Image (cartoon, rainbow, N blue to C red; front, side, top):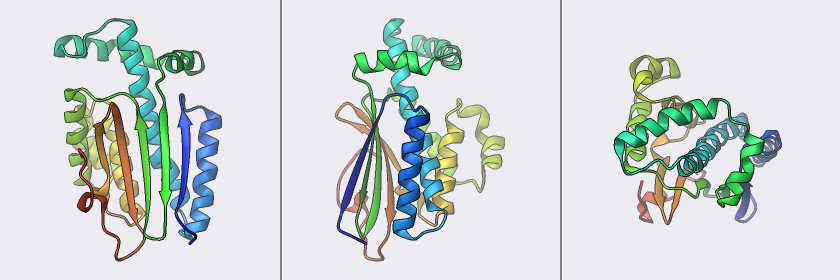
Length: 215
């Protein structure tokens, strides 16, 4: 493998062009890593994380436009219910203008060298406490199931629609032969980050042992 290589993608709305660009990139990465099936698995993982990040940005615009108070739990819950209905009929292309006006985007960074593959999916809104607690709960649940059916049976009613996506991410990481405990979702500096970490060398030292973050 060649020296360290870094690639960046910027997304406002995950449209067909953005999906195709990501899919082609990960197909090429599969060939470089010589790991059959890894390209489509990585694409599906990143697509899910980007979708969640875009949705978080859209939700923030929706909350601001409708003057919901994020710090009031009852008002936040009412806003979430209204947002679900809004999101079902969202015209992404039209709403992209609002996201750009508020400078809300999703950035995908891919950092590859001979020891590891790192993928960061960042959106420039932060999670409120309730959102962070729900993500941690869904991730913990996903670590203990063998497939999406089991997750749905035991946790589907509690995941509020996002749990299945996170469970899929965890299960795909397992299917690729990597440890899903390296997967992190955290926020700092006004951003929410989903970090994927794939060791490619036996002597790789995981990031959690070398840097401090807020996993």
